Image 1 (cartoon, rainbow, N blue to C red):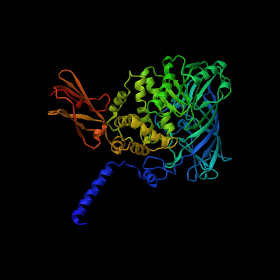
Image 2 (cartoon, one colour):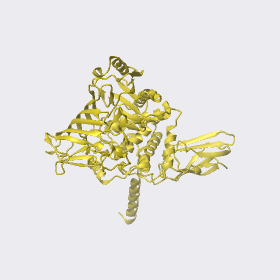
Image 3 (cartoon, one colour):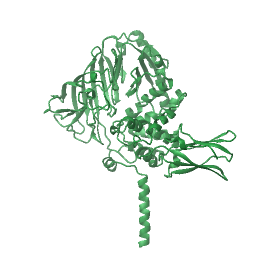
Image 4 (cartoon, rainbow, N blue to C red):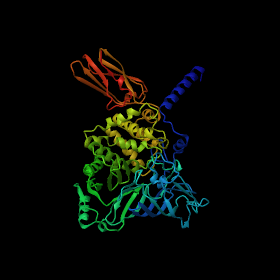
Length: 619
């Protein structure tokens, strides 16, 4: 090869490498190694042939004393090591230690609920007693974790049995996602000693629970019995096993009708015996429950084709605004399963527990919502929390580090449903208003920033609004049909596993037949924000032409409205695909040569932190 050809080849190679670099997503070396090995994860977005995930069986019995807020529990955990690794340590989560004196928290709590945390009164591992408080023993307590050195290592393919007894005082102030809301009503979550996740990416998940980050769990089987005094009702994850023994004849008849029809039945409740409420749930990441002796109890079901899904709403008697929640929940399940995104609701039941405590929090088959008087916001809250059934519960997302994978999806996926059930509220416009307050500030960080490193506005923006809009504008580019096909591919491959963000991005690329890394990079990896402006308007032989500049770097749609001198309006829309070639300005033809009065970029359904440069009034 002569020097001239060598120079040409070198320039060409550098150009190809530069182009490839522009279309490649940054990946930490420790994660890149997993894809290069091609064992557990592939660049196609599919799990590798050697993918594995551990799991456990839980048998739990809990007794609650409402008058003192004491919860006492005992459990047997059988933990199965399906990994190729020998486990010389086990990690047990003690979530209630967030209230333990001296432990770190993401926000202040009332001193009245600070206590000794989860008190372990008994711990047996494979038949050997272990003292969790012995500084020289086999267990070491730190943060909200208990690190255990088992008597024998747990070999690949083997299991280990842990028997634990514990107690703690249920918080009635600073109730972080659960607690007592009056003297006889509570929602109980993060409440039992739980095996942490051991995975192919991080090994044991040893992150402490400090209040903000939510879930990262394997998929387990639960057999749970809950004791409360007579007169109390209990609602929980899974199926109630002993309804006939617990309910009155009248309520049992209503219970049966609710399982078979769409009409809401209101159970009387309050006449339950002192027998334990017995629940079972299979292949779920967590178990939560609620109780009260004076809440209204609505129930119905929704036809899902080969089966019906049982739906309940539980709320205070004087909360008249929540009387449509049972129907909202049922329609959410039906719509998302049959209309969009057409992913079957994976569980047999859903309960919406509603207190006057505010907020909203999801758990498998049960959510803990605050009372909402505005219909549109009630629809938004209910549908958002139920959408979490898919993400993270069906998909096993590591929300502690990548909260945008489920929170962003729970923002975006119900958009169509929310517009259908509550057309009086423009939920996308509301989300855009929130983003516009944060976009372009120091809190508008790259979405791929680990969630456990974020707080406050940065966490809300990076987990909810920015990724929610990113998913929505990607759907707008590819269309509903291709979007749902790609999502079904993702769910089929990763249901019951632990996908990483890269597994999602790679799956969307492969399933859609197009490399979207240019889009993922700018929305999820780059320091960019939403800011379009109209640079110029000029008349050409083809008609009026607008030049739009992307000052912020985020690829967002263009919605341009021209008002003619005669009062007519001309609207031109372009999807975010117009920014694919990395240009910072594009020309948009308005489709008219008539005299103009005003041209404006939409800032209601397209985010833009500087709307003042989005209007031209004179020509």
